[in-house]
Each structure stands twice: as structure tokens, then as C-alpha cells.
Image (cartoon, rainbow, N blue to C red; front, side):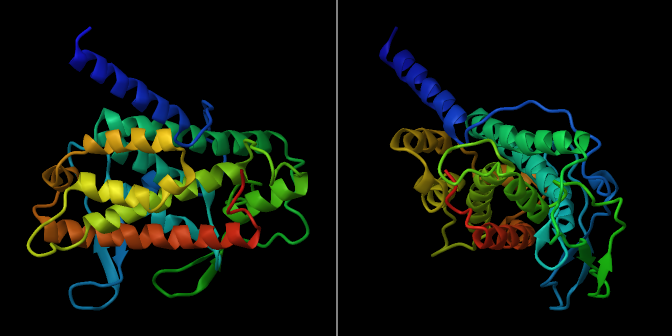
Length: 308
């Protein structure tokens, strides 16, 4: 075997190792009936931009992107459907957001796609837990459980949803945490496959993608746009790298080298230039930020930001 072949084999081994360690875990799933009351396919792509061209807040329609597996319009609709009540996050649209983000990563090529496989195992763990909870209706939310409400985008008022729509133990981040704490399945000292620990891993990865998309939306500095590879590496170093071993960090660096150039991202979301990309990505980042901040606050309130 030549030197180049050995190097290629070594890179492949490292990337496969990255795929297995990136987030930890594995579970196949089939979950269609849990968390009733949300259907992303039926969600209107009437997406809201807080900084429209005229400075006024209002609806803007975002069309689908023909020929692409990843659809930024679906991602936005899932993200906008996730916030509930005053500080909660509904789990089904949250996980559906991750489904679309997985498609986003897979579109970036097989190197980055390996990372997405471990994210899929994390979403499947929570889905499997939700399915098991539905099959065991003895799950209790506890005496402090609150009804879930949503805030109307049009009126700004809260609307209580029908109980049948959001009534499962795993229907939201807060209900999942409450149920798992009540059951004593959250271990603050040892690794487990609890929904809380799994959510924390997804939460950390969401910050990485949020920061990457935020950087990708940046305007040129001194007339130069930095490469997506450089931006993704920088976002990783400021987020997930803090939780990874040296070997995983090195493998991640190799994955980011293979990241497509900026023109690929224009085609991926059907825009013509950096200005249009920036406008679109800012909307995505804003929606991710709302979901991230709510989840961060809930995990922090329950002392779960450092679950092993």
C-alpha cells in the first residue's frame, strides 16, 4: 500500500471514529403517533421576519427549493413551531428541526455527513423514550405540571392548546425533564441514555450550527468572504470542541477541510448571492436562537448543563 493510500485509509478511520464518538449513542426508531398536535407538513410556510425591508415586522412567504433534499423553509417552519407557553419548547417540532438540520449536514458531503449520523441516534433516543412513555400511560407529569400555551404571531396573545394535542410525558422539554426527575432516571454523576442527557448533547450541537450559520451570514471583511470550511472550524472550536477529546477534535478538523465552497450554499437554499444568503440565514439564526435560549434556560434551572 502506497503512502497516499495509507494516508487516505488513516483519514477514513479517523472520520469513522469521529462518527461514533461525536455525540455518543444509538437507537433505531419508528415513531409516528407520539406528540400529537404538530404536523410540519401542514405548517404554512408563512415565516416571520423581524427586520423586513421596510423595518416593520410582518409575514413573508418562503418558497421551497426545487431539487434539494434539505429545505430551509421546512427548517424555519419547524423552528417557529417549537416555542410554547412562555419559556417551553415542544419536542416534536424541535426534533423535526433536527431532521432537517441532518439533511443540511448530509448535503455538505460524506465527511460532514458522518457527524449527522450520531445526531440522528440522539433524536431517535428521545423519540423512543416518548414512544415507550405513550405505551406506559402511568407516566406522571407531577403536581406542578402546567398547561402548554402558544403565543399567536398575529395578536401576541397566548392561546391554550387542547389537552389532547399536547398531553404526553415527552411533549415538551419541561415536561420531559419533570417526568425524568420524578422517575429518578437522570444521573448527575454517570452516563445514561436519559432524555435529559441526550437533549444536552443535541443542545450543544445546535449552538455549533447556530454559530456556523451566523458566521456564514457575515458580510465581507476588507472585501473578503472567509471560506465555509474556516467558519465551520472556528464555530466548532468555540463550541463542541470544549466537550471533545483531542482525537475527536483532530478528526473534526479533517471533516471540515472537505466542506464545500460558498457557492454551494447559494444553490442549497436557492439564493443568488451573499446578500440574499445573509438575509435568509439571519432568519434561521434568529429562530434557532429562540429555541436554544429557551432550552438553555430550562437546563440551567435544573442544573443539567454538565450532565456526564
